[in-house]
Image (cartoon, rainbow, N blue to C red; front, side, top):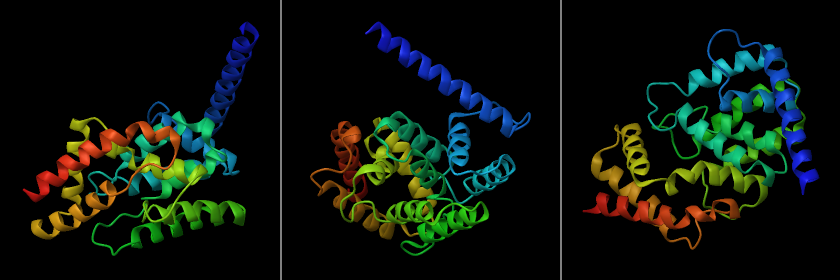
Length: 243
């Protein structure tokens, strides 16, 4: 057991040293300390062979997109929460870099007034522009593209493996603490403030009912513990919307 612990410690030290080396090469400058999300971006980009200049330039483009004024929930904070969850369950991933890239790009285009699937389709296209610039292999491009497309319809069909980890990270907010869930529901309403209240209540209620009708909301075992809390949260919101 002692040898196993020592080996694990050595692995962690090696990983930290490697990450520190990568971050120093990227040289983000005096903007701020390296955040977990930015560190994950550097790691994923490195895995796909993206040079440091490209990492910095596209990081600015991605963060600028997620800071647009029409966003209230689908911001960089949402991406950070997804990345935190993905990294928490990284040992269950087959291709962590693909999951991370899908998380960073899945809402890169977000206009609440767009039609169903349009945001995800355009986000996928932005990922493909990024991938083409750096010569990422077609197999890798297709893998991430399919993940991004599926975030348009989380609950249509089954999912397993890396796709399940991505989808569950995206919907983990449904099983959050009640106060955080209420804040989330308010932010979603703000994003759809252009929709008349009665119409919004109807559409949102349909979504909630479709989730509640499922025996299991989350695909991967790593997220099964959120099932009960998600049902309580959504049942509350449904009551609130229909009273």
